[in-house]
Every structure is written in structure tokens, then in C-alpha cells.
Image (cartoon, rainbow, N blue to C red; front, side, top):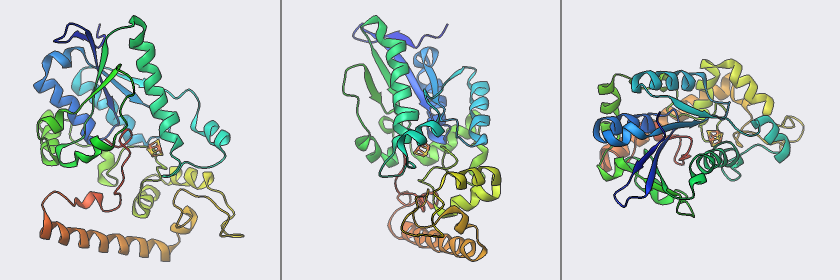
Length: 289
Ligand code: SF4
């Protein structure tokens, strides 16, 4: 049985873990490891921290990854539902107050790692992270483990793997991109506040039921007191976004932004400004890798 364990060069036990987000980079890393690090692939454990609020395409993609890798993905469930945590906190998570990632992902993952591997009292978890070489700054900004149990490893950075290489890995492996890639470029919760207004509209068109659920989480005082409401996107409540005039403007603004970024890309570099990143400069490492 796969136990995630191999002996490292120093002779201490090493446990190998990759946390999949359902996104293209962490998925490509799994296939990169299979092709280039067979000893690690043999032993590695794949885990996924399920917020239970992911888009359906993410769950489908995880099932597909299991088939293509011929390895199981351990689905870690939250110790408390998002809805209950929302009640406890009393406000929606946001970029400034990102309790969702902490409660639904980080804590769940760390507890699993500790329960699973710490009991021996020795050894180290080698945690593989799919940050690419063309976004290496994210690795510097990531939160490092404060103890010796977890050692973070960045095979894409070490091997100069960029976005085009990731696309090639996914194509060559046969798995391709997740289906949500047709309308959204990030994995994560359907209501993620990192998404742009344009992506909110894409959610509305592709999963109107989920969009409706997201509306129900928002404080509905916008009509009576515009200073006292709290939504996923603080510029505009979701129910305002889908008014025809607003939809038209959001689509037009997004198009202009893409055109501007593409001009900058032509002028300055070929990898700095990806059109997919037009809307989202800040990404959640745990949820969107
Ligand atoms: S995907 Fe977004 S909403 Fe979900 S846990 Fe991550 S940051 Fe929070």
C-alpha cells in the first residue's frame, strides 16, 4: 500500500505529499513527478482539501486525474462546514479576512499531515508545490512551515518549467485541461472572492444555481443602506451585476483590460502578462495552483 514514505539520502524517513487544487499546475506537477521522479511517484500521496463548495468541474477533473495517474486522491473534508463557519465568523471571507483558506484548507491539511505522519516522532514530509518558474515570486511569498516536519519543494521552479511546459505536460499525459477552463481559469470555490466581475458573470451563465446560492450569502441591505452591506465583490452586489446594463459594462471593461494587457505583453515580455491573469493579480496558493 502507498504510505508516502521513502528513506531520504540522510537515512531519515521522508513522506512525499502533493496537495492538488484541481487546477492545471498542481495536476501537471503530478504527471511531471510520474515521468521524471519515478521513485517519488511510487510513494507519493495525493490529497485534495475539499471545501465542499468547489465547482462541479473540479470534482470531475479529480476523478479523471485518479484514472490517468492510476492512483487515489485522498479527499480531506473540512472539520466544520463553510456555512457553519460563516455563522461563527459573522461575515464573509474576503481578501483581507481570508478565514476560508485557513479553516477549510490549511488547518485541515496540517491536521492530516500531523495525524498521518507525526505519530512516529521522526521523519519529514516533502511537500511538492506546483508553482511555476515564471511565477517564482509566489514561492517567496508562501507561508513556510515553522517546524521541521514539512519541507516545501518546487520542482517546476527547480527545472525551469513555465506555463507552456505545463500545457505540454497536460497534453502529453492525455488528461488535458479541466473543463471549467472554457469559462474560468482558476480552481477553487464557486464563490471565490478572488474572481473578477467578468468571472462572476461566467459563473452566472454556466452555473446559475451556484450563482443564486452565492447571492444568498450576501447581506441584502444594499437597497436600503448602501454603506451597510457585505458581499463577495465589494464594488457591487451580485444581484446588481446581472442587470443588463451592468453586464454589458462588465464585459466591455474586461475586453478593454485584455486588449491593454495584450499590448503590454507585446511591448514588454512574452510571459509577464497572461491574458488569463487580467482579472486577478493575487492568487491563493493553496486554492489556485
Ligand atoms: S477558493 Fe477562494 S473562497 Fe475558496 S477557500 Fe480559497 S480563497 Fe477561500
